[in-house]
Every structure is written in C-alpha cells, then in structure tokens.
Length: 238
Image: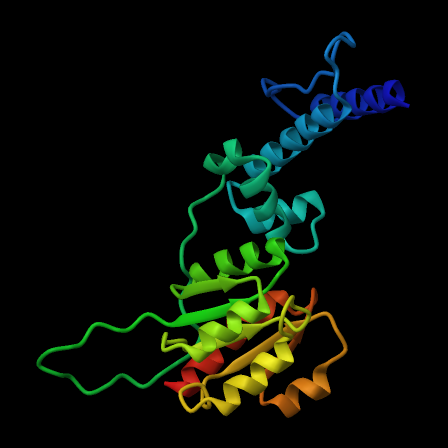
C-alpha cells in the first residue's frame, strides 16, 4: 500500500510539473530508499509542497490559496500554516485589517480627541482549532480577543470586573454550558446590556434566544459571518 501511494504521488506531481510552462520549480520526488522511511512524514512533505505551490500561485493571498486547494473555509489553511507548516508563513501576504463595514456619522470636531477604546471580546470555545481561527479573524479587524476554553473559568471572568464589549459563546463547554453563561450575564448588572453571540453546532437556538442572545450562528456554515455580526452588534451598542 505504501509503495502504491508513493508511486501515485510521484506520478501525479510529475504530470503537474510537466504541464507548467518554464519549469524551474522545485520538484517533489518520492524517497529512493526505505531506510528511515516514514509514511506520515512523506505525506506531510507532499502537503507542504502543495500548500507552498498554492500560496505562490495565489500571490500569498490565503483565501485564494485555500480555494485552489479545495478548502471550504480559508481558516482551515490558516490552521495548517500556524500548526504544521510555520516555515511557510513567509509565503503568505501580511494580514491587513479590512475596513469596518459599519457606517457611522462623523462626530462634531473637538479641540482634543480622545483615543478610541479597543473593542474587547470574550470568546468561550473549547475547540482549539475554531478558537485559534476565529481569534486571528477577529484580531485582523482590530479587536482584542480574550479566549477561554472552560465554562467554569468563563463564569468567573463574567462575574469579575473586566470590561467586555461582546461575548462570543459556544454552548457545549466543559464545566458550564454557553446557555448558562448567557443567563448569568443577563443577571449581572454590569453584563446585562453586553451583546452576546452564540456560535454552536448544537440544536439550541430556541433556548439561546430565551437566554438573551442577540445573534445565533451555526457551526461551521456561519463561521465566516462572525466578524460582520460582531461589527453590527458593537456598532449598535456604541
């Protein structure tokens, strides 16, 4: 099975490279011997080769490279770069915060303008892949993200005095569920008006609305909508 896999990998890459004009690119070659061979390492090496090629053809744009690779969401490629292929981070274009879509009327001119306070989001999510991807997405908008993977710890944070402009909650959490956290926030005087988004794969939408959330999004289909919903809710709050 290993031999067949290696033969198929070598043949496929060879055909792809032969079709390209100009040549000169680094070619992926299967190993010539079995000493020290690792199937997992070879698959990772081929994975790196394809990601590097996609980034090059996409001009370093991660979203475009993810499309070339057939990923449904670009954050899947972001996670691969951050976790398994950090040596390819130089090949992606720098993360540039995009302009906010919320349109606000310009305030009257003042003699001294106070610096804008950074929006702070408490994100409670026990899935590290989702947490890392969303943190990078939200931080690219210029927002500060405080991640928490445990419901009980999140409850202590909510009861404390830290300033949070928005709560982004999963429901299935260790310790305390997202629904319980939403209900707690609505009972606390200093959290009563804080916008809450629940992003969950579970069937808890009705209970979430009853708990007092402002938006309910489903995993994984609505992940790419999170930044726009955050911008809308923070805009309404301010």
